[in-house]
Length: 274
Image (cartoon, rainbow, N blue to C red; front, side, top):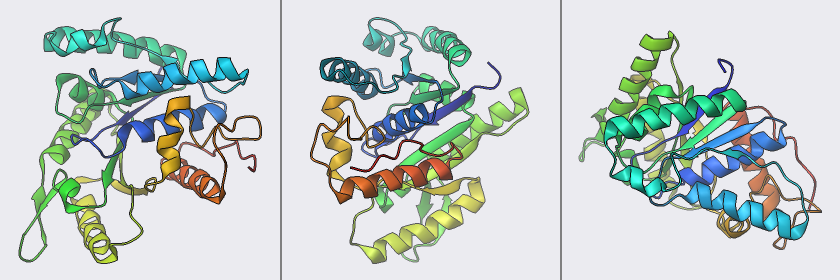
């Protein structure tokens, strides 16, 4: 249990691609031979849970085989925990997290785009915090504030402060600091000037609050069109091919490989050509 790794995908803003990152890390680790458990703390949306349900159905109907992460739920009626007391919800989370860590090499936790007691508990338990953000100052504002005239970094923002508190709590409790990686996700092919400005401010902020900057996943159709099948680019092969495969899929596979390497999660073993 002590050797299992807790990976939390966190950002208090929606639309940054947290669930997409969580799905791809879970399947990428699975193809690498690791056992993976998932916990979806987005109590209402449950994108990660629906992804696994789609995966079970498609694999069974297609008579195909692929790694299946273990799913751990707070309860049968997950949405009911949204109205439960913070103490009850966190206690239940800690219980299923202990179960997941006992059964898997990695536990991938998807969090909601909001500050909740469950999200804070997950961050405090994390060995690795992965924060995807869109390449814009709208998303960057959650991490750090910039001067509207000079564009110079002023101070860390609310999410950075929350992560710092979570990492400090873990260090006090376990005497080790969680690794924090911010991904520049869903990069657009244009807007080079804005991208450079965001990149410069991220580099300055990373030195202040202690995160690493990693590569995210570009804004590609393939990441969305595989969701109904419960698949990711890590699954694509000559046997698993629910959509027409193109060179864009090869590029997407390389993005996932680079992401896993940056997060120190090993190599993406599955690499069959289309």
